[in-house]
Image 1 (cartoon, rainbow, N blue to C red):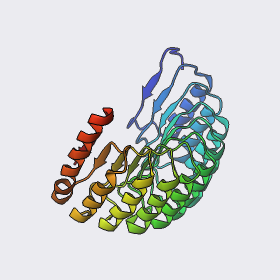
Image 2 (cartoon, rainbow, N blue to C red; image 1 turned 90 degrees about the horizontal axis):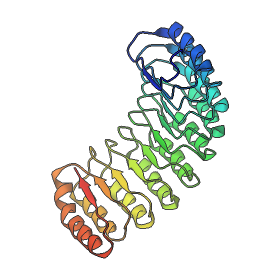
Image 3 (tube, one colour; image 1 turned 135 degrees about the vertical axis):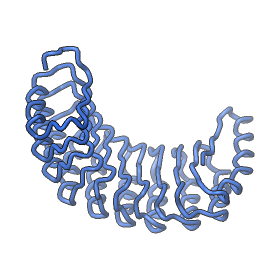
Image 4 (cartoon, rainbow, N blue to C red; image 1 turned 90 degrees about the vertical axis):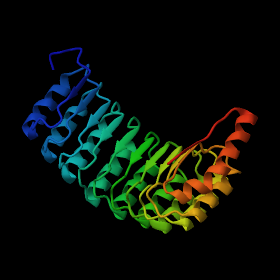
Length: 295
């Protein structure tokens, strides 16, 4: 690129295709100023993703890359994984709404094992199932850099959550996991709750729209009794009634870390607000910290 001061470029929905990506990839090999590139919804396919990834192997300034909705396929994921092995500058990658198979997840997991700079990856809407999630979880066991992974709007169930729970027991870098709009159910929630008991790094957990009920609240409540790092828990769009909310409220008396709890529905709000207000008042008086309840 000839403009030596250009730091960010957005080419989303510009129909650049694979050929356009090849030209951009060559530019990235020589560019020393660009830090962000957004190429969402261009249907570049695997060849386009591969071309950009080739540029990333040499480029030392690009830190944020968005490839959302490009149908990159397994070939694109494999190219990105290969790029991650060589590139130690990219900090954020958005691959949302690019369907991937188990093989693509395995390739990406291998890239994550050896990368020390990527801190955020968005894999929402990528059709990732339990097997794919398990592969990614294995990669995260050896990763020490990634802080945020978004797996929302996928097909992750109980088995995928069990794999993530095992990762939580040993991973010390993940601070945020997005799992809203999946199929985790009670068994998956129970597994995650078990993982939280041994984890001292996660700050945010998003479990909205996952077919969770009152029994899931009990599992999470027990983990909140032990976990002292989680600050935000999102559970709206589930089937949680008054009983489940009362369980959470009871265990919040012993948890001094959680700051925000997202719930939805009249039963949840009515049952938890009085105790929440009492807790907030007590904590504000003792150490000045506040709490927030969102609905």
